[in-house]
Image 1 (cartoon, rainbow, N blue to C red):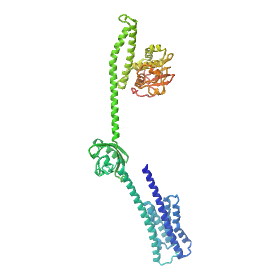
Image 2 (image 1 turned 45 degrees about the vertical axis):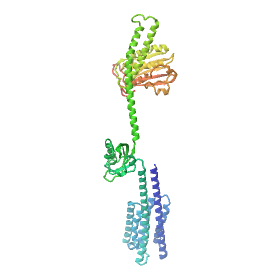
Image 3 (image 1 turned 120 degrees about the vertical axis):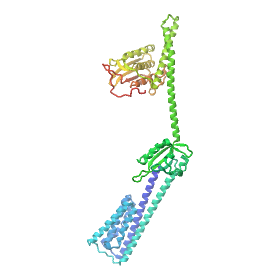
Image 4 (image 1 turned 90 degrees about the vertical axis):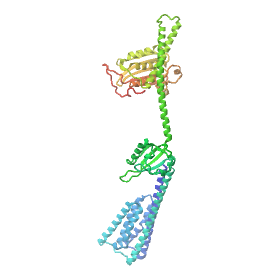
Length: 575
């Protein structure tokens, strides 16, 4: 931004200088015209109409000088000055003898003055105007329509005076041209000094390369970045500086900038003078190209070693985290397997004791203890099964075994599983599975686990006198199963976390309940593996509803699967 501001300031200053120069030149021309007019009046006396017009033309530059002090565009004023000057010279030549006039030499001054106004186009237009004015004089003289000149001086005196005036006018033009060239040279020197200062003091390395990549210029920052002085880099090819593995990357960036004229960037390792490599970011852009040739390349190179080191740390940390997660999943799977074997024995033996299959146990307290052992073992086995299933899902080893089955039967089994718990808490259970929803296509065991988890949560967080319901419906988007309770509900803050493994809602009532926080996570994961989703809707203090949508589970009356109208996430997607 600072660079653009300074450039704008230079442009404004240059425009003001050009306007002052225009005003000065026009004022000088008006003064010279006034002197010539006064001399003419002193010698010739009272002028006629034609001479009055000529005298007014001599004073016209004064009006242009005044107009230069206004906001009129300078280009318009310069064009008007050249046109009026050409017309004035042609008119003066016409009234002073035509081609015999000593003022013919003044036509040569018109293109010279135009050189002050601009470049080649301005000179071309001025030369054309002078030629047209001269042709007009020739045409008038050929028609014998020239006015009678009142000049009666000897020819050499008139020519000498005209030549002297032309010399004075050309002196003004030459002085102004020199001043303009001096200002241009000064601006160029200041610009070169500014860019040299920036290049010498920039922390980034600035280089200029030929189209084949060889270095033509290098800034002093090469000492800090590469440990080499700039002169040791001149003429070097990319292969002598860049790491072999990064050579193609650098060459691609150079080709993009030089041959296609587009800015490009590359992250490459450059070789330092001590043989070590430093990570750099090289931004390339094309320099101005010659016609039909590939452009040179200007590159700005920055040290990004710290950033690359940070990236490596992040990658290593990610790899360690992934490895730790895999190790955790393997550990949980192994531990779950190891724990299930003795638990099955505990549950089986306690069940034998509870039913007194080999005779009476004796004390009734033993039967109560056996029943508690059986119940606790079953609860612990459910927790281990949940952990094992989540580990399999995270490891991508959980596979669905889909089949056609009766949803009402599986739902009844799930309701029966939580009946004892619901009766103890005084919570009513309801179930409604319409006829069109009874036959579905899904993994029976996974769906049963979904329903058991949702019903268990509903009963767990519903106070005495509440109700938990299981309903199903089928529409054009698939089968939708809803488990709704009238329990404590879930806050908006907890809703954002629930469904992630081992996350539970906060609250005094929740903390009194057992659980690992895997229930909803398993529901979401298993629903996603079926190509569906599980959506939680809850109002704190009023209850919770979990809606499980299975788009690929619907069957028609003939047992054929119905394709859903809307497209859902791919089957088997992660939760």
